[in-house]
Image (cartoon, rainbow, N blue to C red; front, side, top):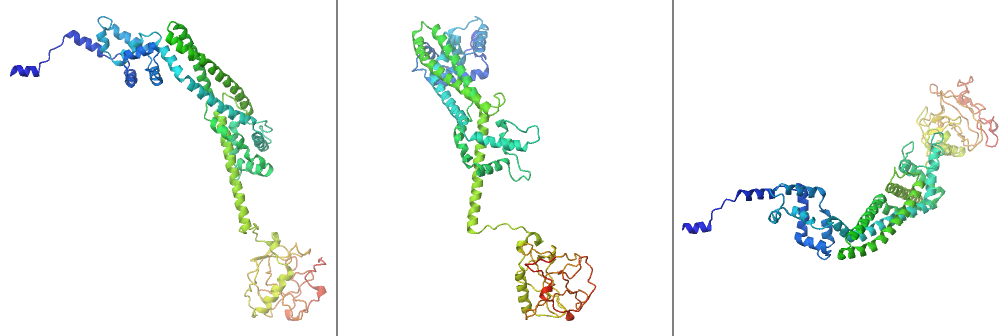
Length: 526
């Protein structure tokens, strides 16, 4: 029974102290923790034994190490620090050299780095191999981006309407800066365009861009579509960094030259020299063509900087494209808004919904169009006198059909029309003949401002027989007292004092037509 238990559950035999020490040395941390973890992740992705990786690199096996594998190996190439760390760890062993068994107990990243030491020019081989895979893709990508920028620069330089628009902006700025140190400017940096078009009116109800669009619509409507000359091309090129592309082209040139040197060093390796030699033979002309195109583009860009009054050290090409794009889009939006507003107003005018603005003034002296002709006023007074009920000493106002709240006095002062006092006989007094200065060329004496007279209260009764009217004026204290009408047409002297003669309204004689107080339309009164 005991023998069976010992067979099934054998006791552990303690290892020798030397074996324990060797295992501790092998398991100690050799590489940086993060570095070792990253290299391990890539090697686990490859899922290839280290010996197979070594054989594929030496034989230039493109079937085993495809583009993704070579690109992954290019990211974990051993550095000088990695090799130094491994050598220092190896010297700490008792024999100062690892045996094959010791190497098998090392971590996968350390074993991979030890394998790279057995391949001459491992890093340069992998770099050249990776360049062969990615060269065509990168050069074509750089060429396409440079062509987009070239088209945008060419569109801006050859645009015919953009310079005219910018000249309008410059003329407006020079006019606003007249009398300052910035007057008579020959140009302005394009980086200031955003601040210029955002300049607000003094009242704050608009910007300089609003005025620019309005002026273009009135003076030169053909310029309204100037964004179509360059906007699409500029929007495509505004995110391209030409400076970084030029740096990438220089880096490709350096890597290709290093590949040329590697082929010369591996002249005895027919496989490597043959494959890489054919690649270099095709790659060099393509790279030179792209570099030549880049130089041509740089010349165009220099001209664009001069045209935009900018410096390369202060403003990037992408920033210039962005400013032009924003300006063109805002101009188009503002133009569409103004056109839509004008169309809406035209439609409302056709339907009769829009009325012309009439200035609202309390004194019709400044708005003579609202003053009725003398014949209309007299006819209305005649109708109101026949239809109204006369009451003695009644001061109740009579409302006419079209009487404004405030009418113009012949002397130019506004008179209240709320109350209309009756005459001594109980009949309404005749209205003074209110004549607009635009209807009759008359000269009227100014009445007193201390006792304004209502045009309705100054009306006189008109006899049915067609005799001339008798004009009377009632006093507030004595309704029977009245003042005679003077030859000048005023019941109150120009000085504002009462007339010395007082004649009762019942004893007054009719005034002959020759001596009427109303001026004739043909012969103006003196």
